[in-house]
Figure (cartoon, rainbow, N blue to C red):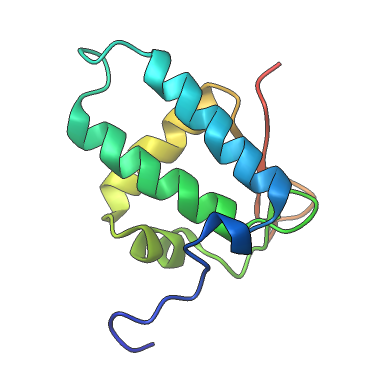
Length: 113
């Protein structure tokens, strides 16, 4: 892949509508967290990651396993450690889960219960 070439859409109008709603809901939830808990750099990287996850999602809110963490992190413009920390926060708070149907399954966007 050439530097600067994106695999995923960057405009919300080019994404699955349910994934766009998910991304906006996550942003609302993150905005409610006090700024002392999630600092500005973390909010910015979280925003990039959330939009990349939304862009990768299909009409069943699943992210195909072909979109590995390394590919998605590169699309979001973050390193592996930042990717790991932000997606861990999303999983911990019920926004993201492993699809789990088999060992090569991807991820699924979720709304917390």
